Structures are given as C-alpha cells and as structure tokens.
Length: 146
Image (cartoon, rainbow, N blue to C red; front, side, top):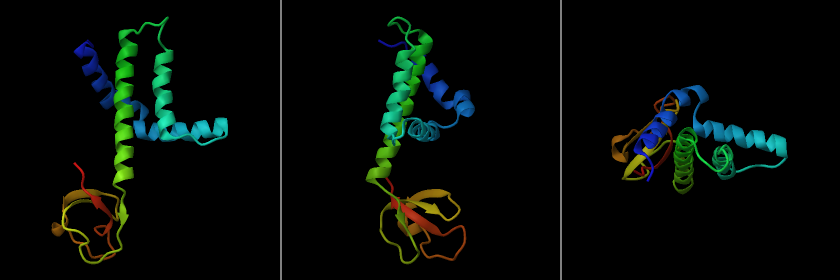
C-alpha cells in the first residue's frame, strides 16, 4: 500500500509552487510535442508526449528502486497525465460550437465562451444569445458536462 503522505505530497507538488515555476502541464505537453517534432522530424501526439513524461521518471529509478522523491514525482506525473488526457477526451466528445448570434439554440445547461475569452456555465435560457458586437457576445458554446 502506498503511503498516503506521499500521495498528499504529490498533490501539493502538482498544484503549488512547482506549477508556478514550470507552468501548466498542458502547455508543457504542447511544447514537448513541438520540440520533439523539430528534433525528430515527425509530429508527436499528446499521448506520446504524456508517455514520455512518465517514462522519464521511470528511467530515474536507481537500480530498479524508487526513492520516496521519485515515487512522489511519479504519482504527481501520473495525475497530471490523467488530467490532461481527461481534458483532451472531453474536448473530443464535446467540442465547442461556433456561435454567430441569434435565437437560443438549445434548452439545457451549456458552457459558453464570450468574445473576450471568458467562459460561463448555466441554463441556456438564462443567457443572452444575440450579438451586440461587444465582449459579452457568446461566440462558442457546448453542452455542459459535469
């Protein structure tokens, strides 16, 4: 059984100071894909890049043994990989729909993106769907999952 202190420490690592220092995992995966493409001459998927992150941590094992530090990092990396894959999956099964304005398109909870890039979630009937050519215009929407 894994020591819960290691799990708690891994959670702290991926949400705290380390994230502030290294940036978001999603952005780093995107950068890694581009870097690998430049070095190797072919495109790499996010899945391949996520596997590379985990493989790197396994390579740091000393003679087949994990130190608490390596195990903590591996647990943190695994959670980051899971979060990134889950986000990618949700985008695939629930893509944004471009909205040019008009009557309310659906009658269920939606996530909307406004012209200024901000987002909101709520019942479609409570949102203003017409366009006034300002930052409050809805430009994308999708069914709210969650």
